[in-house]
Length: 122
Image (cartoon, rainbow, N blue to C red; front, side):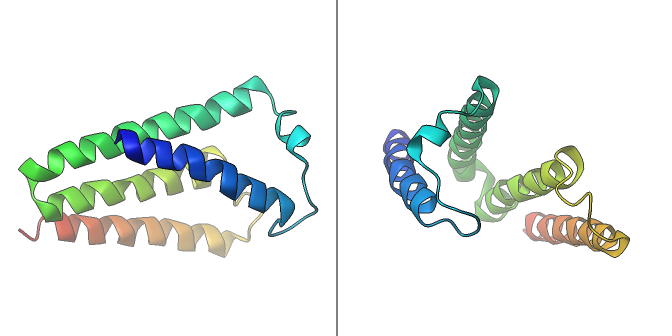
């Protein structure tokens, strides 16, 4: 876990630099603009990394006892949590047409059914 964390830290500088220089959308961003973010923004990023690290640590520790199917299913539950945060907490689709909200809800339902099927397939 320690080496993985170091790898994430090191690669973050590489990927952030590349995406600031060659953004997918919008114009280039200077490194000085990165530090214009509020303390809260940076703390949210640190908190997100800490949660990810803690969850991955627990997943690695539990996989030996739980078995591969249950461990995989529980690990993929993070995707559901991320989708719920994006859809309902941060409201990333608030300006989308109503059909999109129905499709997103169906996606979450079917994803959770699929995970449950994998977990209970032992």
